[in-house]
Image (cartoon, rainbow, N blue to C red):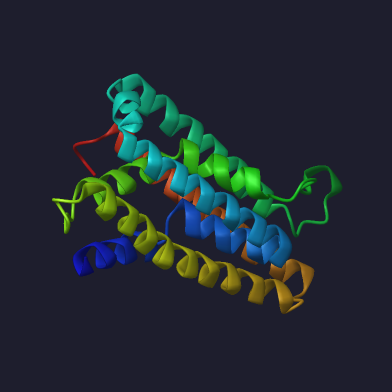
Length: 201
C-alpha cells in the first residue's frame, strides 16, 4: 500500500499536462475557472481509472491506430489550451481568450490523454496489496489516488492563483502565461517525438 501511494505521488508530482495546465489556468484566469478546471481533471481521471479497471481501456488501446489518434488529438487539445493561457493576458483583442477553460476542458483533457491511461494502468494493474480481495483493493486504490491527486493539483492551482493575485503588470503577466504555455507545448513535443521515434526516447 505504501509502495502504491509513493508511486502515485511520484507520477503526479512531476510536471505533466494536468499540473502544468492547472497552474496555467490559475495564473491566467484565477480561482473560479481554476477550481472548475481541476474538478474536470479529477472526474476525468477517475473516469479513465474506471475504464482501466473494467478493461475498457485495454480493448480500446489494443488497436494501435486508436492510441495514435488519441495522442494526436490530445496534443492538439493541449496546444489549444496552451494558446488560451498564452493569450489570456494579451491586449490584442483578436487573439485574446474569449472563453475561460472550465470543467469540460479538464475532463476532456484527461479523457483523451494517453498518459492518463498509461499512469492509471500502471497503478491499478500493479502494486497489489490485497490480492485475495481485488474489489476492496481497487476501492482503496481509488481513495489513495484521489487523496494524493487532489492536494497536489490544488497546490499547483494555488501557485498559479498566487501569480494571478499579484496583479503584475500586464506585460509581466502575459510573459508568465506565455512561459507556462510554452512548457505545455514542450510536453506536446516530447509526446509526439516519443510517437515518431519510440526507440530513441
